[in-house]
Length: 292
Ligand SMILES: *[C@@H]1O[C@H](CO)[C@@H](O)[C@H](O)[C@H]1NC(C)=O
Ligand SMILES: *[C@@H]1O[C@H](CO)[C@@H](O)[C@H](O)[C@H]1NC(C)=O
Ligand SMILES: [Zn+2]
Image 1: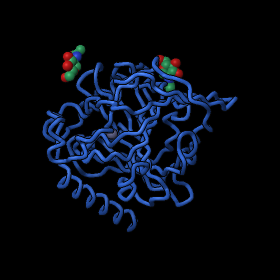
Image 2: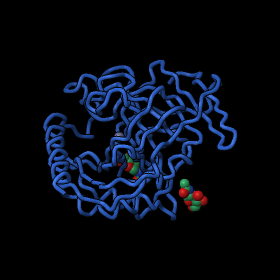
Image 3: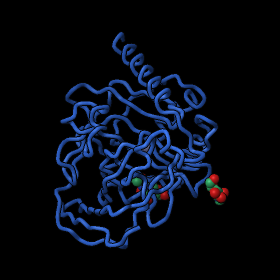
C-alpha cells in the first residue's frame, strides 16, 4: 500500500513537471514550434497514410505481443489536460512488450492515451487515404535498451507507438467500457483514479494488427521529439456513440474541444505496409511510391 502511495506521488510530481514544462493548446498548433523547436523539424507526426500507392519491399518476421494477457496489479487513469492517460504496474516479469515485425529490440509498454474531436468526422491524428476516424488510441512503448521512457525519447529509435483507430459501431468496446467507468472521476479533476486492473489484450490489438503501416516520426505533442517508430493497424476497433460522448465530456486545458494535431508533410519518408497472415506468418513490406 505504501508503495502505491509513493507511486501516486511520483506520478503527480511527473505531471507537475509536464504541465509546467510543456504548456500548449490545440487552437493554433503551428505556434508550437516557437516554444518547442522540434515541432518545426522535418519528420513530424501525424501523417496521412495513402494505402494504394505502395510497393512491395520483401519479408519481415511477424510482430509479437508479449505479456499483453497479463493484468497489472494496479491501473491508474489521469486527465493530463491534453488527454486521459492510462498506466499500470506489473510485476517485473509480466510487463507487456512488443518485439519483431519492423522492430530490432523489445519495446516495453509505458502508457496509453487517446485523441478525439467534437464530432465523428474528426478526432484521429493519422488519416487513412485522407479519412479521419472519431478516436485514435496511442499505446506508447520505449526501447528496453534505453531503460526508461525519458531516456529513450532522446533517440531516433527510442519509442514505438501503436496507434489504433476506432470507428463507430453500436457494439462499442469492452476495454473502453472498463476505462470509461472511471472517466467521470477524472473528467474535471486532475486527481489520478484507480481502475480495476484489466489486461491490455482486451483491446484486440493483435487482431487489429494483422496488417499495419509503419514509418518513422515524432511525438504528436510538444516537445515533438523525432523518436517514434509508428505502428498503425489498418483494421479499426469499435467505439459506440455513447462511449464517444464520454470522451467529449472530458475537460481539456485551455477549453480545447479536440486534441488532435493536423497531419504533417511526409518530406521524403517511406511508409511500409506490413501484412501478417495469421496461419502462414508471411509478411510483405511495401514502400510508398508517391510523395505527399
Ligand atoms: C466537426 O468538427 C469539425 C472541427 O471542429 C468541423 O470543421 C466540422 O464542420 C464538424 N462536422 C460536422 C458534421 O459537424
Ligand atoms: C465491431 O463490431 C462489428 C459489428 O458491428 C463486429 O462484426 C466486429 O467484429 C467488431 N470488431 C471488433 C474488433 O470487435
Ligand atoms: Zn498521442
